[in-house]
Amino acid sequence: MKNRQLKRSHAPIFWGLFGAGGMLAALFGPMLVLLTGFAAPLGWLPAKAASYQGMLALAQSLLGKAALWGLVSLLLWHAAHRIYHSLHDVGIHGGALAKALTYGVAAAGTLAALGLLARI
Image (cartoon, rainbow, N blue to C red; front, side, top):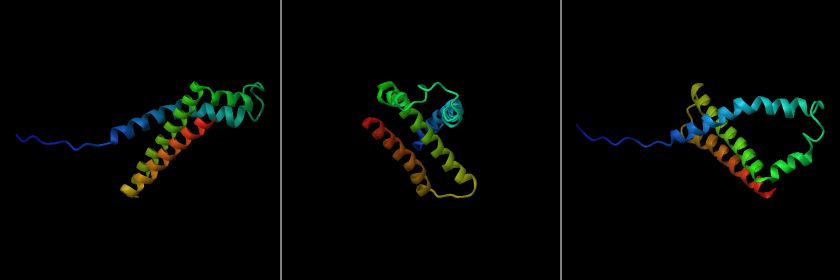
């Protein structure tokens, strides 16, 4: 029997980011929409809960920066993976270009979020 080399793939990395982003989207997405889209504008929250100073304090703390960066970046990777495979499902087979665009936008967004949070 021949010893065959298996082809290496980066797919598990992207599937892992997709899964983590999907979990965060399912758990935190609806609550973020409720809080930032309805509760805060309609005055259902205490004044300090959605204040600029409160959000700035969250973004300035190390734990807050890590949580915000993780949430933003994993949601971007989840969206990129979903878009890439949805394009394939509807018959748009862009190959390396589609992969570079979708995952490139996620990578650029991840780095931009990191840079913006580092400046705060």
